[in-house]
Image 1 (tube, one colour):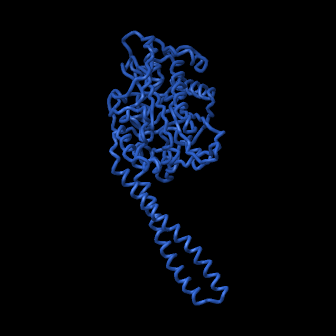
Image 2: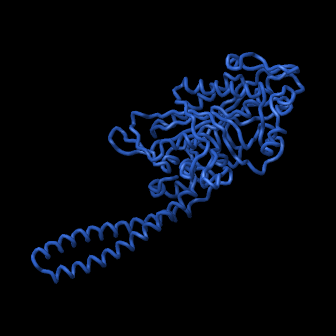
Length: 426
């Protein structure tokens, strides 16, 4: 959530920056500033009346001790009227706070100056593209056919058990995913990330704090009886571990990683872009999260981008890195880099990771702060990234390394998987 102090400094500049995200916000910004002005006036009046009460109460005590009961009674009556005014002001302030919050939560995060104007994915900037190597011979099967041919998975069973958009991995397919998870977690922990096993269900406060609510409420699965949400990513529980906490600066950066199931409705999509493993309601992902100081967060973002880049290089997959334009960014992000791997079989790029800096947008909701070296309270900056999402990585590994009788695995997975190839079962 944006800080109202930031909006007050330069409302037109904030509106101009939000326009990069294709958001018309100037009326809302001035509206919330007007509400905050009213809140400030009420607070000043309240503070004055409370000070008056203290002064009058002391005078009443002095008059009583002097035996001047009649004048003391007059002051008591005045105090009663003042208390009624105080009660009225407190009610007005209590009503204003949710009004202000209800406007603020509709405003997305301000984009970083590096973010360019654009409306859709076609406007994203390609900042790196690896060479296309090891292109397999034609014709190529899609991973949905390879899963069936090599008996690695079954979408029909997934549909029977749960419905469309669910899959079942079998045998070496399940082992391949387990090998990837182990590689991802080992790679992350070797770079200083603390491994965490978080819950898969979170309360509304957690979903609100990281920006999923109210923006993406329709995309989340909800357990009504318990008022809990299935997580769309482990970013939510990881970041919320530090909700309502004051951290010491020397503990930063905090670096966390987790493997989890993720749940997203992803409703209303059809066609080859969502076929097979390309888009699922339940999928698996390894996440990395950082909490750090404001002046170090862009350096942390660059390091996280290099971190994911190193993982994809070891997987020997052709990939590219995009810096998202304003119109393609998430509600909460200040700047995002997407990683896409190329599928030779599908002849298109598949997104496998997003690495984002949220600056103070999440921490303002989280109320996660730290004391700097001068003892001043500061909001932390939060960052996260996929390292990595499993379904499309598996799809690309199968499609790009296939032959008629086997699928070759990248060298980094040999020790985890126990062999160099996935062979057809006889």
